[in-house]
View 1: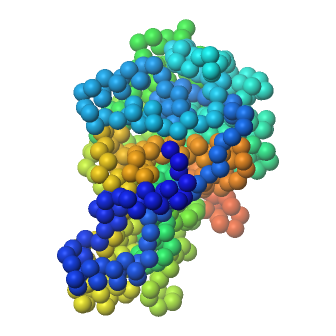
View 2 (view 1 turned 90 degrees about the vertical axis):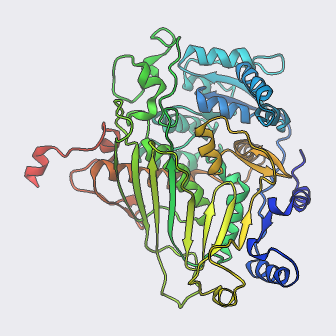
Length: 540
């Protein structure tokens, strides 16, 4: 598919009007049409396109995959490599439901100029699946017993890291120190100290570093950034964004493979820096439920919402974070909360104002999560002049007390309960969602976007951007700066929940404000909430 800017514009121009941009308050003809044109002219908003990137020409980029679990397989598909098992499963799904287009979407996906040359996974079954599916005459793939062996082999130009969180930073740093490019899943790090070390390694390396926040390629988010920058919403003082799940898979209770045992899993390598505990299949397959390997809701799902709003608002690291919640819906031995409320404060942030200078300043980012209820609560950006609902499509409503739109509201040209602008890049494209968890990601704009009326995997676009920068130079949309902001914000939320108190950021020193007697990383890695030792309380 030729995604030049000219062809993209032609494609958008050919979309049905209800699938692209519409103004619900301007239905009809004559006067209503004139009002519609007047308002759209004042808003001056155009659906924004993902940036075009130079082609990945020349010799193929040699890529290795570290971690071939659920997300590892998904990332390989975005690179153009699907397992035999997945293809057959999708073929059968399409036979049952003609709208199920996952296999056809994959087959239509542009080919990237890469060779998948290596796989590293501590579970034999997963590694052997990759070898069985990807080892062909055109693509020779080798299994590496350790990530260091792969990185230092000289056989890879780049690695994709899709491991438990506690391995993200060590593997990324090792690759960058050897000038091997990195695409790492979120969160970027597992501790505060790692966040600084990884930033140093990325800055010093000749390699390209990218964090896997694929929504930065989604058309609705790029368009939302244009809307905010043009002052359409006025001063945004509150953001509300949510996680809504209510099934075992969404609560990280993944299936345990029948062939899992101490002979097929390298348990010691899996543990790495985590506490040394006996072999435990529950921990191995459901690692997101424990702080020793994962980062809970704050690192696993809050990071999605934080970064997708950061790419729209460029708000940076909050000056303070307060969190609460607990284990209220899945009492199954986990030590990370399954209900979480996080308030991030940005007292000096502004999107601009239509009111008197100095009247408005500051914003609260409110994240609310439950793994025990799936009621869809949208992401909303609440401004003085308008409110935006943001997901795979976006909608803007004027506020009844708006200064900017006051005259139009008074004349009845706008109504608070009628959208003034809506962008839906899906444009009559049928979507088949295979699970509740997939629906959750699709609603947030985290699975795909649409170009020329065709559904496109946003992870494919994100990885293509990374590969293009490796080959041609330039800048990725989510690199070490964005990853650093994401990681620090997530760690502040995790620390606040564990300590039961506000965590503050020193903007000038670029560090967390210390709390006497508290080692932040010790707290982050502890099981569950932190209990201050009695001796420290007495001494205080």
